[in-house]
Length: 523
Image 1: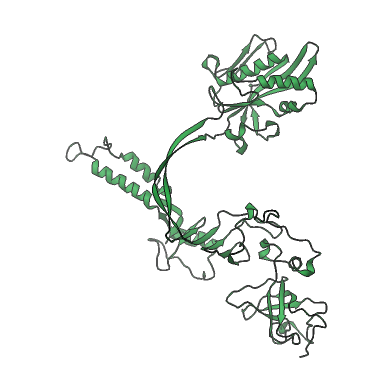
Image 2: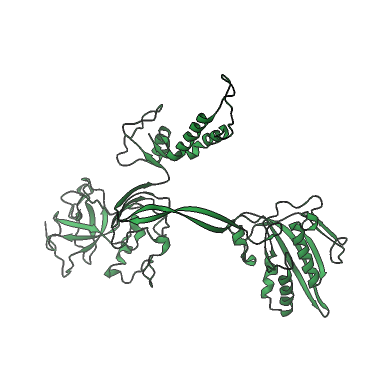
């Protein structure tokens, strides 16, 4: 076999592209085409398909990493190749090692060109997006935890799996990010499946209790939107003439319609899904600023239920109310389910605060500053009526007793198993009344179809100990305290100072969800 030299190429590591990775011996060999200015190898004469992977094949390379850490590149990926000597390039003593990645999420497969971009001959190629802040050097929060960090050792799979060896923790993970293609930056999957083994130099031990008082805003969805609108403002020598309307709207529940967010919501920029309530619209025309303010405030007070202690709007005797100078909503009965109620201008009217016309701006500002639930309020223009006569978000005061902890210098270890569904399977056990789980052909892993169709029906939910004890204690207390009015007569069902049968029945009815954890299963 003729030897070839490098003809002035002094590199000891040569780029190569993977031709085939299906080694018949299954020892991690590859067929690799060296990529040099003058190809290091040429197919021998009369080389055929059947000669591949044989002694005649000049492109077979051995893994430089020992077999015990299996890392086999994909077809068309970049690999580094090297020879025992520069003079002999065709014998079997030649090796490869996996090429570089241009970005960590390309671990499923890295193209030859991308791999080149981080090497000297890739200076003119586009560089990868960096997930570290260039100023602080910190990993962006949405990517933090996805990939091994300096100081940690790791073994990574081709997808969302890895084993990370930190200083005092071992993480075995699957599904650490959502499914992606290589053109996208991945996002964290908080519901990954994992095993965590941890060691801590200190242990936390209980150290008495502490009482904490707290105040929290109650957060529920706003029920109604009382919309006031200034449709047209005409400036005359004697003042302003205003056309507009006031009406009630229902609101579809969404994240931005929670009471805590609605109070500061910029209505002009919102995307509220509102629906006008039939017959609730009060139109007015030719009103001056005082008329408009009074109508809006009367409407708010009517919906609140201030008028005769009933929730309806009734406005009459005004020259600007049409038709027939009278408005009543609703015609019969009262308004229900109106709280929490948000009152405020609609988007078109709200934009008048930016109007270039000074007179229009002045009219809007005067009305906005005087639209109030009542005169003494310092909330104007828009706000929330939480309930009748209750303006603004309401708070809930609570007192909570918490357990305090202290650190003690005592080594402690933890073992945690997590995932959407957990299965603890024994080869020697089976669920009573069910066939034994067949784990045949699962040596290289259990498929999702096997979990759902074969294993789940043959397993039982794990029991929560404390919740089971609570039920048993209730039963024992009832049995210990019940009384019979006379011998041979059924016991009194509801003892005065003991557990009642209704409490036990409730616990049993809830047992499927409280006592049993159906997502952690055993056979």
